[in-house]
Image 1 (cartoon, rainbow, N blue to C red):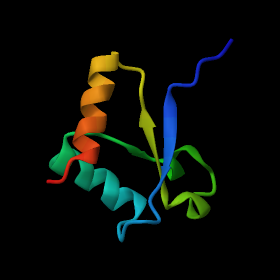
Image 2 (spheres, one colour):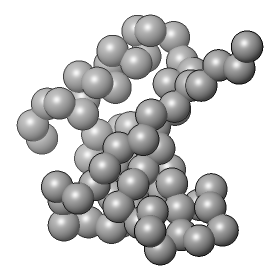
Image 3 (cartoon, rainbow, N blue to C red):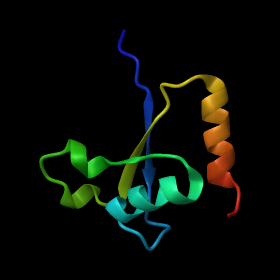
Image 4 (cartoon, rainbow, N blue to C red):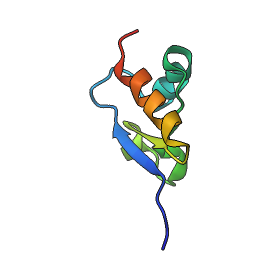
Length: 72
């Protein structure tokens, strides 16, 4: 059975597009995401979505969640 190890997040709550968000995130939170548009042949409808992989040890995922939910 295939295992899916990613989640898609909607960026419509931000003023950033997918690429800017993905460039900004590692600098500010030390967490990486990938623009979902990179996986499509029609990127325009997906420019407000990013993909987070979670094929990591649970402790790494917990730390990423902590970083993402903590103010700078």
